[in-house]
Length: 320
Image 1 (spheres, rainbow, N blue to C red):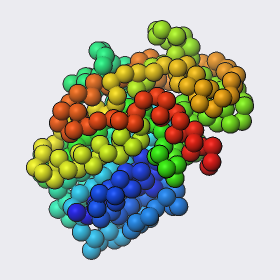
Image 2 (image 1 turned 180 degrees about the vertical axis):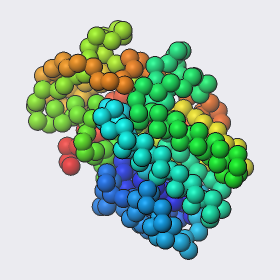
Image 3 (image 1 turned 60 degrees about the horizontal axis):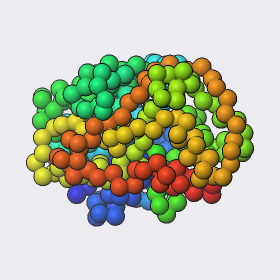
Image 4 (image 1 turned 30 degrees about the vertical axis):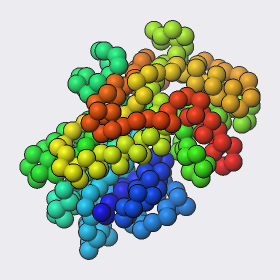
């Protein structure tokens, strides 16, 4: 089975590519390398920006794919509030061009890397797939927009899709060969690890939320568990599964302070913390109800305890 992985040189994409290869899939990576890293690519590679439709079609002609896993997108909620045009343009136009290619080539299946950010501040916890969609960032809105586009392409062209709405991707593979390397980096765990490595103050955005310790609570899922979920979703579609959406998380949340304390424990460095004002688009608490993914995909997040997440991330960052 031949799979096109867009954004396959990025953090989650590159790890999913290795998971696919280990299971015998034939994989082509598509990436514009704006955020991805060429050195992570170990299979067939096409360098192109999804927004360049003519070039996309030209570079992928004569390649016959059975399915697509679509990661390629801009993915920072805070940045999206400063660059709304860029986020809408990149995340929606790029996806539209990809769907047009799938339509022309009659590729029947797509697994979409979506996000819990499309729920905004949830009305009930844990968050299930029926939660109302009310994004609080341009990033979340752009992902919701593409989910809606997918629904129409599915209805009109019979493209079967799976939306994987994941919570906070984190950690690194156990062999330490790949890890989280964004520029700019805004995610909590790598930023806390950077503070530990440099013994510099860590900027904590808000300690006045309505939570037990005043800091945001998030559901962290190990990147290996996420990669496995993409393969499970792909196999469900391949075996006749219908279009659907799934939350990928652990079913519990950790506060920012709990995560920071775990980084201090694993690193052995008691770095200082400075309190900054809240970032726009950050809900106070969000964590997943993952029961649907467990029941229907066979999803089992075996690597996603906080200590394993932080320890694997620390080992990767320490040597890179």
